[in-house]
Image (cartoon, rainbow, N blue to C red; front, side):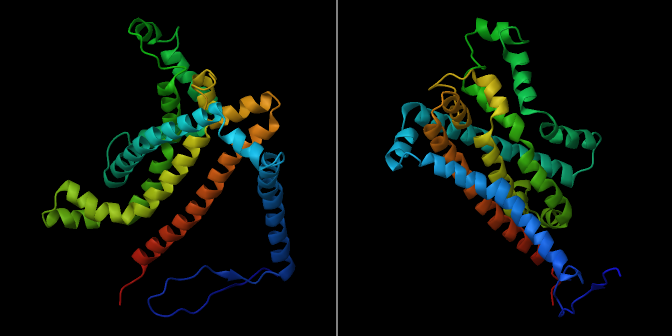
Length: 297
């Protein structure tokens, strides 16, 4: 017999809750067990293994691996890349989402497709694009060499590759949020005499702040953990163009496993912090959307 959906009576002003189905108890138990098994095998066990290997030789060896000169250089370069790439992607994401959600124009679907492009292109291919553009035999390579400008195997190339692979995150979080909110409040503010900047600062920004933070956190996590595109354009120069993921690869290839896992634990900590912030902001975002939809008395 098929499950019969049931609804729960609600008080006036409350949003309708999701329908419940009368599934047998064993179905719920099996589904929960499968979910917990996958989380254990593919999340908890790898995380425990990373930290166990990182501290296998003791706390002093762990600290020594973290404060080693090349590791410090990799951490600094990773932070510099994120500090440059994330704000630029924030500006692009807000501008692109505003344009797509608030206006109708020819080529709108093409712009959406271009925003999604990094999701469908391999990061390695993204790095090769910059090699084609700025390499010694690339389109702009001879001109860059003639003017002693270095893009590849330097910080600018790493930043450009990181921006390319991370620019969809903020925009893709804000576009559906802005579309769902509509433009009535902005139009009312403009009718009342507010300028464009005041309308954005006092009306639009408060409405999208949680979605904006959500996108920024995801963008930052990807920027600091990016490997493929950065690997292609960096040149793997120790102490100069190695980010944290590249430093982990070098240490692992040198069979320096304790140091490799010690540095990798920094990325694992970043993932855990990102997950916690992501969950908190997702909760606040859902609360904000629910408040907007809740009818007033």
